[in-house]
Length: 209
Length: 355
Image 1 (tube, rainbow over the protein chains, first blue to last red):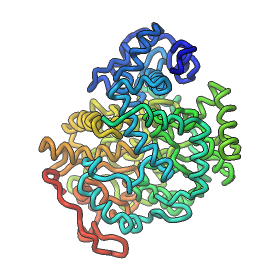
Image 2 (cartoon, one colour; image 1 turned 135 degrees about the vertical axis):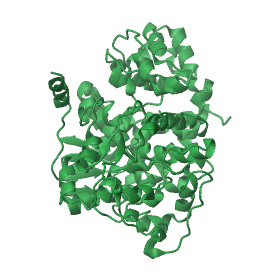
Image 3 (cartoon, rainbow over the protein chains, first blue to last red; image 1 turned 180 degrees about the horizontal axis):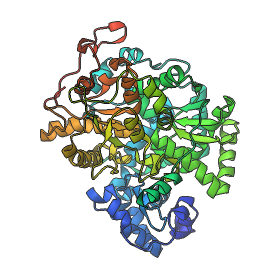
Image 4 (cartoon, each protein chain N blue to C red; image 1 turned 90 degrees about the vertical axis):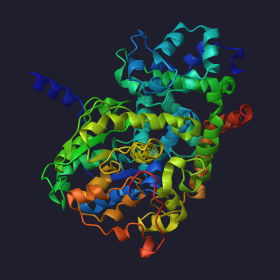
């Protein structure tokens, strides 16, 4: 584990999202009141901020292993409303990053769902240069897309041409094919900034439930 | 005094919107789900407003969805943002105009991070140079595409073929505006009207003859939730939040919803279909849903663009009842024709939602 040499609080303090996200929480609960995730999950950002503020190493380990840190939907409504300029959404991002770096995320069912995201969004970025791509979205995984989407998938080329897109074409335009040279630059950024290592870490630590 | 107070708050949330010479940063979601909206934006900017905008074949995803679903760290996303800025530099432009609300938040956050934590700027420059050999200068202005349409809303009105008036009653259409969370909740001063009084869409609707509805869950998130939508088992989160909004707006009988965010537009359209199939509940009149439109689709309708050139056939909720209210002509037999009027069949009909 990466934190053998360092305590978790020191690792968190190195993350600018953490230092930007907490500046003395008064536990008023405004974040929980405004939070869409608190409405539907067993999730309370006020409690989470309280735990993080205590900086107890054992409590932090439990948090990093838990489902709790994976419930936030990243709308960042909390950033607007906190009367003390804390950002629970940023703290969540810092905790999720640390949970993946330390491998603790694999002990949580919610954390292991990163594998699905890596195999969809992550691979779309590498393969297409887009986070999502029409060819990769089928009703099997996305039944909510409905019959219009099925019709669009069955007739993608004709529909997109009618609407003025440049589907898989060269040059500019909607849904153009991103050139091999541009994809290579993007891949190189992923490699240089540690994203590919993160992808491999997810594959190594997760198995499909 | 109250009016003065509100005006004072409002003053803080004016933002600079560039006049001309835009670098266009596209949206992954919009290109896939509402492909005609980006084309319509370019058409309005170039042909209706006569402005210069550069559509760059070399840009890629900003990786914003990967960042907010914790697949990549912000170091990665800042470096990808820096590459897009480098492309803008190559085009000798300084006004970076962003089509996606998630991306708008990402670019704004990168600029703020570089300012607050200067070592991150140095690190980003190193990463970009090492990975691509590129260098970059930040834009003078980052604006959202809805800001541009807002800025020129009166010019669009001057060329309007239709206004947002119910032709049967003569009254303004009743409109729900939904602002994507990352347009102003992260950086309120970056959005017209800030996070509490966003005016970017309300301004368009009022200029074009409609009336804005205020309702209890007006500022509630659509429920995208990034990882929650991406993971099938968690997708109920997205559905539930959208249901909160429609249950809240239903008593006010909106004629349509306008959004400025790719995800919101898509979810509020598709989840109405799912709610209808699951609960036999529809929110529009006579078994239809409430149409959910992008601001370019609304601007296009106002300007008299043919409805099916705007891609309205890719909505699951039918838009025709709205066209009938405004009095916009259309030929329903053309709705599902492909390129060169090719017969490509029609989508299956949903079980409950009327289309």
